[in-house]
Length: 183
Ligand SMILES: CC(C)(COP(=O)(O)OP(=O)(O)OC[C@H]1O[C@@H](n2cnc3c(N)ncnc32)[C@H](O)[C@@H]1OP(=O)(O)O)[C@@H](O)C(=O)NCCC(=O)NCCS
Image (tube, rainbow, N blue to C red; front, top):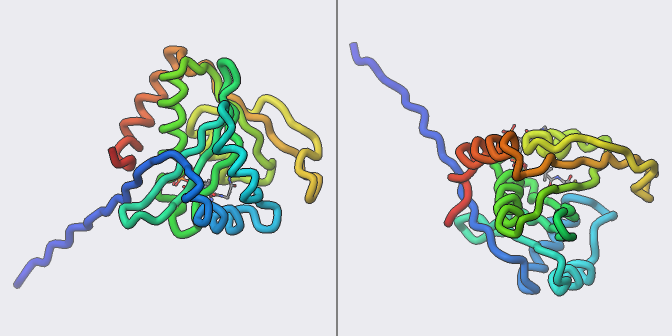
């Protein structure tokens, strides 16, 4: 009798994070439409954001150099406002958003930014879950913030990322997700 032993091989996709540039925008606009439908940002908004000195926009590329997702931040004194985060449907649940957030945290640590904040639709359970993984808490609601359907926005905040408790969370996240980012 022959025993067949099955070993499951796990393949982890890896992504390289680079600054968003004008040449990224054709691909960005494709994802923007897939992620937000008719309520997506315009190309001009991204051009303005790339030029904005308080902004930081980063893209995650697959090993085949396809744009998997992107994220934008505004840095205002010691706060970072997450302005946009979207991942191509083909690359979802592979850690792309987590990698972009981790990269943003690294940037915030380097620049002594203490808090991160964002608005998210109350119905966007996946995104809310993602931000909770990063320790964000919902601290308020902007009523009828989204004009297309009058949906409320949750206002989510991180704690001070320099606190001992957040640093522990950050180290754990880095341990889990750090490998997904190609250096
Ligand atoms: C929200 C979004 C950015 C997540 O991107 P992603 O790369 O798939 O997220 P990740 O793979 O890094 O997932 C991180 C975690 O978030 C949570 N999560 C993400 N999508 C989820 C979903 N659809 N349902 C439940 N949890 C979800 C999970 O906890 C997940 O971890 P797990 O896969 O280990 O369970 C992506 O779905 C997207 O682009 N959505 C449309 C645009 C959008 O809503 N942007 C956010 C605006 S505030």
